[in-house]
Length: 459
Ligand SMILES: Cc1cc2nc3c(=O)[nH]c(=O)nc-3n(C[C@H](O)[C@H](O)[C@H](O)COP(=O)(O)OP(=O)(O)OC[C@H]3O[C@@H](n4cnc5c(N)ncnc54)[C@H](O)[C@@H]3O)c2cc1C
Image (cartoon, rainbow, N blue to C red; front, side, top):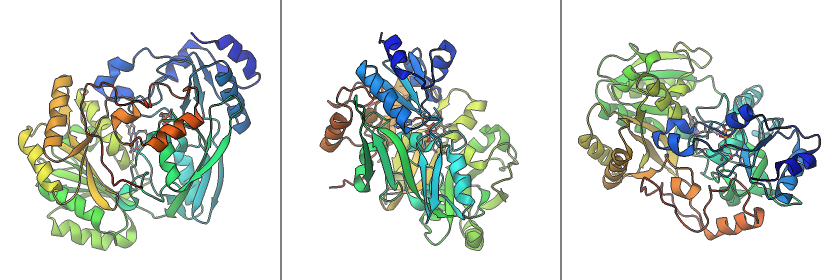
């Protein structure tokens, strides 16, 4: 137990609560999406939730927590899906949700406080003719700080690449976890230190993101009688650098039938590709649809939601969510297939799984090439079955990030270099930031032995 009473005395007028109902709510994220994490993470609860209203209050909260050696878990919208925002060692949840000001939209760049809601940022950018380059399918509730600290990419990645690709995050202001917290401005390749580190090495206070020109995107579903054609179409669409495309998301039959709201939209036995295309590119897009033997079965504006939710809420992490409404036991992996052997690798995996275990793949740019991220969706029967699927994907030439564990290293999307170790020690000398997530010594035991995603090394 930590000295919460002493902490409360030091917090003064900074809003906080120890209400058990709120503590439980603010100690959870969306880890239930993983059948392996569901049991593992239950019962980890913060002892206090502090909700600072400005940077000065963040600094005073952090200072007080450090003084009393209380763990600090930063939190945004709480939509993380690996339990990144679960306080494994109790202590203080630093709820950044009231640090939500959009500070400027100028010259194609948006600057906001870390707790700014991403849908509000998108609206603010659009009001000035710009839009976010990338957003997660959880845009409605997630914060920019949580996305940068916990996410990897999403809608927009088919055109712009992932968050980690150079240039997609402009600058970050971070605060150290010390009794006298310090602020640092980070840009260039140093951004990689903070991105996807789960707030375990710095507290993000402000972020600057470059924007893209705003388009009135058309959200389309293209149906294909053959999965291979759907996949080749999706990959080629992402590769067509002249086409304005924000999303290319491939779903093998019977997924369209398992997504309740899409039932009947896609013909029987057809796979689908969900695409966002800008009006100037629609003619070229339709030519591509014909070339690959597909047909457009839905086409509407982004503000229209004929399926009860915007179409991006059928892609990325939300794709599984939609399937789980019909088959709650469904799950999958974050496999990644790249390079010239991508099609063969996916075909190899498909040849070894049943047609009731359909592929879901997001197509996007990463490190200068188009990659397919996803795996067959399987009805979960146990850890052994998941481990077998990991082995199959890896043996077929894919790489797998472990979406069923909470550690930065163990998930394997971010590589930990000696610079990361030095940065963590500098910013968090007492190891109080989100403890249990960033293991400096080496990989901890995990039920799944995954390779992690591989990226081109940067010097
Ligand atoms: C259905 C579903 C769909 C998803 N789709 C996507 C997707 O398309 N792309 C994607 O990348 N992710 C996706 N995710 C994961 C997650 O929703 C996103 O990464 C989201 O942007 C996280 O934002 P948040 O504000 O909810 O962060 P939180 O869940 O609150 O936090 C995420 C991590 O960041 C840390 N953190 C939060 N704020 C700060 C801060 N100010 N300073 C330092 N650390 C901080 C937390 O401690 C935690 O480790 C999905 C998750 C679900 C459940």
